[in-house]
Image 1 (cartoon, helix red, strand yellow):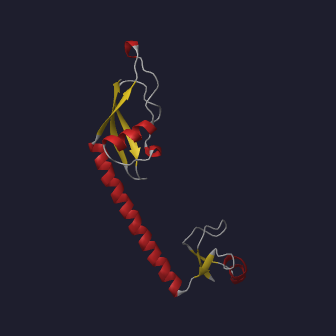
Image 2 (cartoon, rainbow, N blue to C red):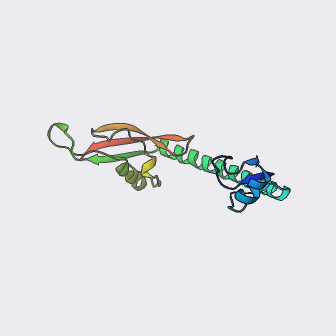
Length: 148
């Protein structure tokens, strides 16, 4: 019997796959536990429509991420940090502060988890900070750190 999986099943496959399994296994385990449905023409057509919709949504998210990346790359934010004698800084600039500055200065909503900092910025200067918006889209944000 052919079955369309509704969930990932360890020994069979991933969600959305069409697998051929024994009739007894399908009737006694897969179908009653709602792990899959029988692969008839109606269900196959529904699966095809769901995949087409998922592809459309993924393409839209990618386009949105690219548009946001262009806005981020064109923008430049300024963050102030306390400094003492000889230009010595107190504290650092983290991705949380960068995210807040982007929202305030550029008007863009960026999750702080998407801002990729290998280490916190501890010196005054200009930095290029990568922002991972999508698995295929990474924007470079220019951050100017000034003395307060």
